[in-house]
Length: 77
Image (cartoon, rainbow, N blue to C red; front, side, top):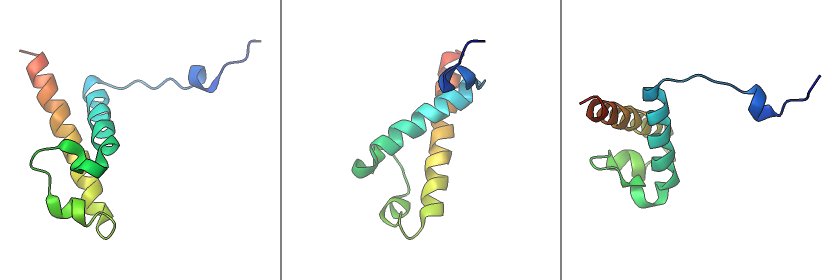
């Protein structure tokens, strides 16, 4: 019996939308100190991230999905 690494054991199937949203979220959170480079982001959510973490998290999640949907729409043309 061969031993598998944790990476080999972990197989998750995700669709394009989920993948693109995850990549968008990763990019936004990697640049969090610069306002994560997203146009039209709720500035108050960014400024009050420590006090209003839930609003900040929801904003990042929503923007990630919007970016994924926009990319899929362009790719399907």
